[in-house]
Length: 405
Image 1 (cartoon, rainbow, N blue to C red):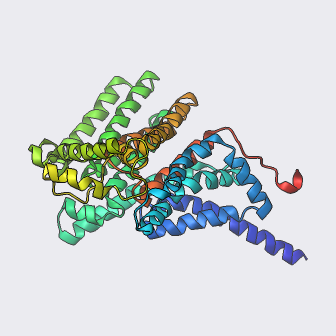
Image 2: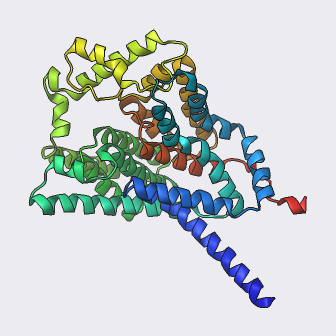
Image 3: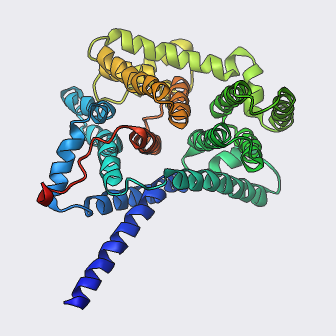
């Protein structure tokens, strides 16, 4: 009996350890590739559910679903399911889209179930691990590209990065926001300031324009915050921004993507985006109330692209708000705005600084990219949104199990 009991305890401890490990592996897997992300995500979901007996699990899920924030964060997925009568004669596109966006439904539930068992877990360890790993792997990917060619080439770097430079730029930007959060919370730390400089340099070298400018906005906001609190002198702030400016000027000369912003009309990325946005807005106007449903939006943009004599027919809207409006109509657009704006004000009210950085970054990126098109963007949003939001929210879960009721 003693042996069986010790073996059972050992198995339970192993399961708990694996659950905590998978909790940290999910964000790190985003830095490596889609297959690893899927494995770590499944491991996190399964090990979390195995922490509960079947009846207790169902009971806790019911409690989680009573949380209005859980429903809000899941509604984008739910509305897609409700719009299934409007898909094309190719049902594969509907099921593929639902599989891709499934984390929007599952993650808010699983993270709350996880917190119910590990309420005292230090989330900062996971955030710090993710941030340092993002920087380390950024150097690895750049180094590999340089080693292969013998010189720096942006196109080679962009091909080397997993999940595209756009998403990797978002990961680095969030990592930088974490170190800025540490400075606001703990004061000036040399290590955090150094990491901010390094991340800023990496963002430029991988050619992630949107993430770079959001990063600069965060830097200014952080500087104003710490100056207000008188934790940093005006000279120190001036010196820091001088270094950031010099880094940007120096490195951007090697990175044509930033110089493209000053190109002629036909090759200017802002002009190209204006075409994409205008065409997407036309589809939204034509399908104002209900949208086009779960159909692929890109074919609806072809005719408009032809009018502009635009060759990039495979490009999507490059704007999450217009994409949601075109696909799910006015209700879908309002729902997406609510999903961003409601937690934005909630984070201000509760002084959740890091979550505020996160949701502002997602809102800004959504103006220039369709972050919910690929699973990597969906997992990144749904994971960190749930982890940062529900950790600070009032506990909605009842910690006692069914047999103690």
